Image (tube, rainbow, N blue to C red; front, top):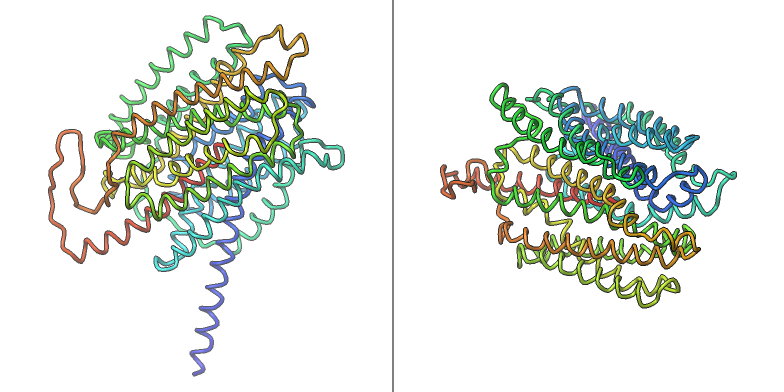
Length: 534
């Protein structure tokens, strides 16, 4: 009896510690998610107070996405090697410092640089969240944990724009937009102190080596493509910009060649190129990239249209987006639990068509009502778009990974997220072409700002419609019914669809359970990262 009481007390204390650890990592994920969605709503205030150019405004959003994308895979691997707790604490500490730098930025250049640091440190912090959850909670409890995680994602999607709108509208202490970044300081400091005490350290049993050359090549190639697109219009499209964009293709080619060499040398490339021999994965990566472009274009031009074109305040613009966020959360849950098991790939294609329908409704409404349009007149198109996005975002990762060998599921999942973020950065850069590039400067000079922004917004939406039409067609290459990828089970390749190994029934059952757990994590991670695009 005397020995039982201390054991029970120890178990209770351990149970309390892991739930506190869960609250810490989820708060960090929520902070990161809200910080991204907050920025869009504060863009006009930033542009006005810092006298920032449109190019700088694009880099405030695109720079974060680019740094985040470039560091995601590396951040996850660093956690595997050096410890998830250690990298999480470094990430949240760096994110907090970067938030302070953003909040005290005295110029557009300082804000852009601080946002790059924010993106890079978020890439160290975010990949550790699900890894820490996986290491902290046993398999039978993870369903409940990921349910909570999904709720946090949904709450962040809805509350981010509203929090940003309120903080900007209130103009606390005369600081204008700065509190949207400074609010991270007490949260980050608390997370750092409590994380050191309550999070348990964990590492991967067989950690791969870092591929720093691959990181440099992929980041360099993206910068060579994104920077000229962002700055080209302001600089009247200089020759060096075209040379730089063409050179990015050469660097991407060098990346592929090096990754093949790295795979042969030590089996630890940054990008597992063998995954692209799986038809469903190659198609899914294409969908993720193009989908990221669509999201990057839409959310930035939408903010500029409402606040700079229509002259709405941050709070009005933030509230306008609530029907969209609610529709995304609802459709995402229904698609995974009810629709995909019955209809498979058709659910994702229906999502693409729904988004197209919502965009067409929005184009009509913006043209019909002009600058007198009201938030309730946008609610219908936004709700339809939100349903479409929810039907795509939640089940897409599962569909992409269905043909991937189980031993490569982690690498493939990280690559999916990275590609989607790169697509978002590219879409944000393209805003200078599809939005500002079509704006009539004479109308702006003649004080016809509202009509000029409305026309540019409608023009941009046509580009997004075209991108989604491409996505719909590429989705035909996804598997009609996502199937489980078992250890040793048949794997779809470019050359063969034959099975290779018979798996005993007990091992199949065990593998299925493990795969379902991984799928839950992957779907939740995908939902989080796509929401980050906002």
